[in-house]
Image 1 (cartoon, one colour):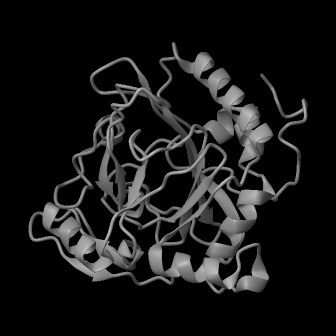
Image 2 (cartoon, rainbow, N blue to C red; image 1 turned 45 degrees about the vertical axis):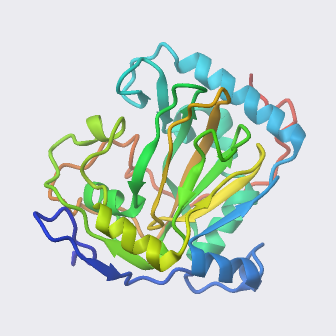
Length: 309
C-alpha cells in the first residue's frame, strides 16, 4: 500500500499538509453534532462536551474505575502498563475486551453516534485504555500525534480515527490535563529515528521514538497561536482527531486525574502492515481480529444491571 505519511526519518524531518479530510462526508443532519460543532472540530481538531454524563452516571463510572484498578493493581499481564520509575499503574489497555462494564460503555450511543458522524462511517474500537495520573506522582506524556504512531507501528492507512476521552475525575489546569495545539491536525509532522522491534515495551512508559522535534512543535504553536487545556468536571467528554498534536504535564498536585479512552476507527480504515516495516504491535494495543462495526446502544448506566461492582 502507498505510504501517504512517511516518518521515522534519519534526519531533517518535514511538515506536510494532511491528505485526508477532517470531516468525512458528514453534515449536521447525520448525527448529534450541529454545524458549529463540526466547524469547530474542522478548525481546531477537537471538541469538549462538559457534563455529557450526569453526576449519577459519574458516580457509577468512578466506582467502576476503582473496581478495575483494584482488580489490576497486582496483575503482571502485558496490557497493564506501569510507570517507568515506580510500580504505579500508568495505563490499563484493552478495557473494551477485558472488562464487561467498559465494553458496554464503549458502545453507548452518546459517544458512538458522535464518532460515526465525524468519521462518516460505521466505527470499531481500534484501542481502548484507562490512563491514570495519581496525585503527586503521575508522570506526563510528551507531545505526539497518535496517528504517527498508529500509522508507523500499527499500519493505520489514513487519518480517519478519533479518540474519545471520558473524564473520570475532575480535570483541572494543575493536575496534568490533556494539552492540545489547535489546528495541528492539518499538518503531518515527520519524526526522527528508526523504530526498534518491540518498541512499545518502552514507549508505553516513556516515548522517545515517534515524538516531534522542538522546531516542529514551535512551528505548530506559531500556526495555532495557543495551547488549549482540556479541563472539565468528571463526566465531560473530549473528542480529538487522530493527528492532533497533544501531550500532558506530570501531576504534582494532590488530586488524581483519570480518563477512559476509546479510539474509534472507521470500518473503512482497517489496519494493514505497519509502515515502519516492523512486526505489528500486540492486539491489546491495536485491534486487528474479529473487527465488526459497533451497534450504538441506548442504556442507563445507573441501572444495577450495568453497575457491575
